[in-house]
Image 1 (cartoon, rainbow, N blue to C red):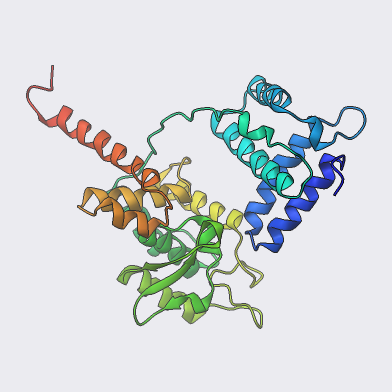
Image 2: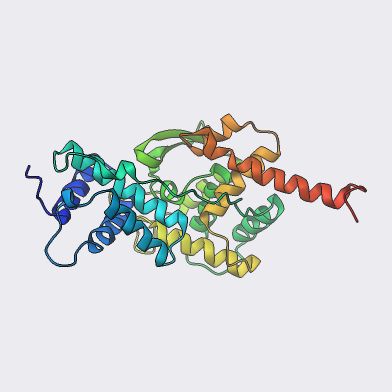
Length: 301
C-alpha cells in the first residue's frame, strides 16, 4: 500500500479491520469518534498522510487537548485509540516508524470510586421490586438491577446477554466482556427469582434472543439501561449521581468488605489485571478510616 494514503482512508481501513476481528460495536463506535476528531485536527488544507505525523505533531495535538480543558482520563482514551491506529498502520506498511510509541501517556489521577453502602443499595433494589413507581416493565427493571449488583456486570455485558447465556439449573451466566472475552458469572437467589418473574411476562418479536427488551420488543440498548437506573435512583433515593457502574463498584466493594479475596473478585469482574481490582482496597481503607475516626477515642478531638 502507498505510504501517502490519506489519514482518513487509513482510519476507515482500521475500523473495518476491527469489525472483521469481531470487536464490539461499542468499541468501534468509540474508536471511530476519537479517531475522527484526531483526523479533523490535521485537516487544514490538503489531506494529511500518516507519514507526515511524527512525535512532535502528536505532542502538539495532545497539548491542544489539554488547552481545550479535556480531562486526563479522556486524553488517555484518545491517545490509546491513536496508538492502536498507528500499530495498525505500521503492520500495513502505511508508515515506517510508530511515532505514537514516543509519546508519553499522561498519568491518571488516583480516584476512589464513590460507592453506595450495602444498606443503600439493598434499599434501592427492594424499592424497585416493590413496584412503588409505576412502570410499563417492572419485572425487567428489577432483573436489570439484580444482575448489575448481584453479578457486578458492566452495562454493555448486561444488555448483551441472550436467553441461551443462562444456565438456570446451575445459576451461571455466560458473560461476554471486553475484547469479546467470555467468563462464567454466578447469580444468586434474588436474581434467579427476578429472572423467573421476568420470563413469565417477557414479550418479544419472533427470533429475538436478547434477554432484556425495550418497549418495541427489541434488545434494550446500554443508553436505555442507563436511563432506567438513573430514573429509579432519582425517584427512590434522590441520588442523581448513581449510574450502572456504581452498582458494579458496590458489588466488588461489598464482597471485599465481607471477606472475599481480590483474586476471586478479579475473576468475577472479568478484570485482566489484578491492579485494576486493587482500587477497591482503597475504597475499603477509606471506609475503615471513617469507622476509626468515628469510634476510636484517640481519633476524636
